[in-house]
Each structure stands twice: as structure tokens, then as C-alpha cells.
Length: 114
Length: 114
Image (cartoon, rainbow over all chains, first blue to last red; front, side, top):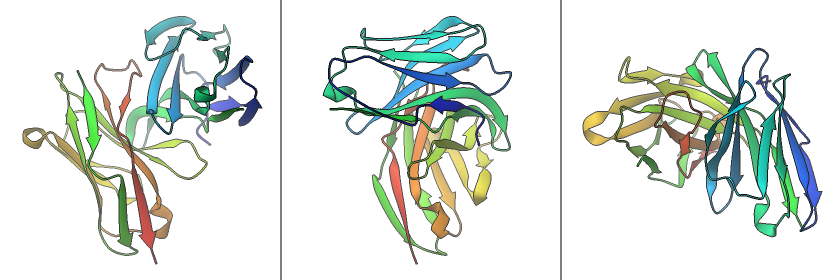
């Protein structure tokens, strides 16, 4: 268990719909990062929040938005969904492990748009 | 601009033989480099990280990587492969410290044959 919790694990929805993905970072960690993993684009950074504030932005579409709440959990909102949005969405948190300082990822939410 | 290239999309080895997964990077900054592993239907797990303290970095599960600035490489090795090592491996560069804006290679699938 990485300590980063993502829900739901799987999500199937239709084109044009809106979904919300949820992430709870490791206890005590202020940062949340969102990544998208798709077959054609690989793993791409979407956005980072730190203690409720947006810290960095990557290749995030305008149809996507995120926020971090006072309890530090984060939600990634995906709207007007298209078939190409089908992907594995990861949330990450900063951590120190026996392998050194790095970013720990949750197990992901697999989104399928039909 | 920063980038990372994994030279092999697929590597196949026999159990008990050495593993070599190749990675070249491009960075205008002194980079932080990582190797992550993703087992099927699992999240990403940090194997090791280079942060300029030592060129030979030891990670978990017997893996290690050597940073070679002259060759802009950060290859991952293991002396003896186990069946449980079968997974996808990602070489990652962080061009700006601690922003979480990690840049992932396309991944190398490691197959371990009995």
C-alpha cells in the first residue's frame, strides 16, 4: 500500500458525460499530482496542487479541471468526455522511501469512455 | 527542453541472467533521474533515484543504475532476473526540482522466461 488512495478504480461512461476522480495523498503530504497514462501518449503530467493552491500545470485540456480541498484530498473533473480520454489516471504524492526521495503513485483510476 | 528516451520497448531475458534496460536523457539542467516499475494492473513504484550524490545508485529489489553524464545515460541493471521482475519500467526525468512535473520515457516491457 503506497498510502495514496484513488477512487474509483474503474469507471465506464459515455461520450459527452462528466466524471470526477478522487485522490487522497499520503498522510501529512501537502502535494497532489495528476498524471494521465494512455497508449498513444504514454504518461503525461497534468497538474499539481500544493496545500490547496495550483503549483504547476502540464498538458491538461480545458475540459479538465482539478482542485484540492482543505483536507488535502484532490478531485480531477473531466467533462464533455471523448473516446480519446480513455486512459489510466494516476495521482501521486511526494515521499521518502528506501529508494530515496521520490513520488509515490496511487493504483490509478481506469477510465473507459464508450 | 528536457526529454528521456528508452532505447528498447521490449526486453526478454531468462531467469537468473542479467538485466539491462537502457535510458538516455536530455536536460539543460542538472537533472534528477528516476526509474519506476509498473506491474500489471498496479500503480507505479519507485525503484531508485539519482540526485548527483553518487553516480552509481542502488535501488530496491537488487536494481541499480549508473549515471553517465558524458553519455547522457542512466541505464538500469540487475545481476540476476527473477520471474517477479516481469513488468514495465519507466525512466523518468524531473527537470525542475520538486514540482512533480516528471517527464516519462515510453517504457520498456521486461519479459522474464523460466
